[in-house]
Image (cartoon, rainbow, N blue to C red; front, side, top):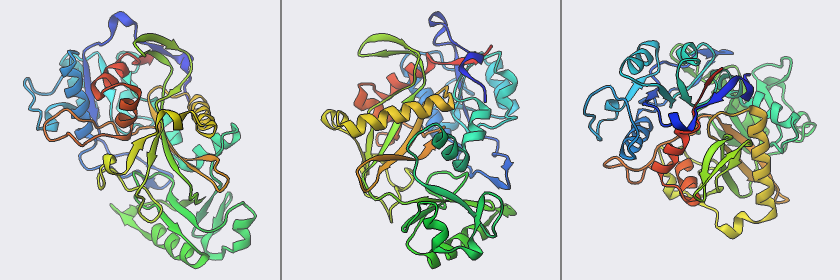
Length: 381
């Protein structure tokens, strides 16, 4: 993983440079036998939201067509393949907003020393898109992470076998029903299931492991089995270190920091539904200022900052957390490429993402949020 010392931030007098927004035209590669599912449209919808908001703010935005239609998302974004990146640069872009799924070997890597980037390091995304790797890394760093174990059809090094799983195996690892089964590399809530007993766990695990898509395993040959936490759920957006403006005052902080946490509710069988199915505005709300001052919430925010520092994030991340039976929050899901849709384009008035909702509680409109993020662009030294 690259570190902050290998990146340089865009100088204030160069921000914002002419920017093009990328969407996912390339499917994610097969990693450890599984391909991360592609969102329909490849995030072109949120990419168009970002580009439209930046242009409305007066930023120089490069688009594939001369006069993009606010209602046509493809008018605002370039593909993230080599041809799309080349086209964006040929049209004058000196900054690329990577609103896409990155990975080692992604075409963006070829230009990381030549353009400014809003997004994560590709290798960081590939490494920590694996929930098992992320949990283990954060646990070693001392972060409070929900107890979990890897399971597969048959026992293997580091994995329990579903075929011979016993309650004692789970209890020895601090797990008790109900539990959550999750793909290691998933998107949204796809394949995430709450199980209440051993027989249900084995049946659901076999079904997920047998699922096929595009000729290969849909969810891979290994799943994450995680302790279900039935307390309050908060999601925390963590911003990277950088030259943000907070309360109207420039702040060149050297540490990650958090936007106000957002409370999730109206879960479906213990799982927060994907925002493409239920609008964020219908099941989420920022914590009140008084709730943010609660010691347990402040402790959670500090742990989220620690997690972001461990991963050396270069762009916003979102961490989902829930409280246990003692009321202590634990981290259970970390998203290095959170949804970034937001209102602005016609018909998108209710398209807030969790990040945009949190930013508004902080005092930033969606437009102000994306402008601030262009000022944190980086490139390889």
